[in-house]
Image (spheres, rainbow, N blue to C red):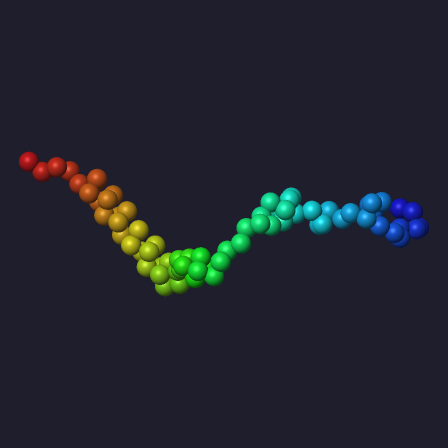
Length: 74
């Protein structure tokens, strides 16, 4: 490694983090008005809701498995 490592790593001054893949240019004209934002339905389930949903899914899967394993009676 040379003793003098000063200066910019890129001669044109461009840094890799400067490029966001053109996303800024592509979506520069997109504007969300206040009514659009307020009308957006967003609900992040709470931990309790996620636990309940998982328990219900497990119960349904267990019930379906039990129905499949039963032998038909004559």
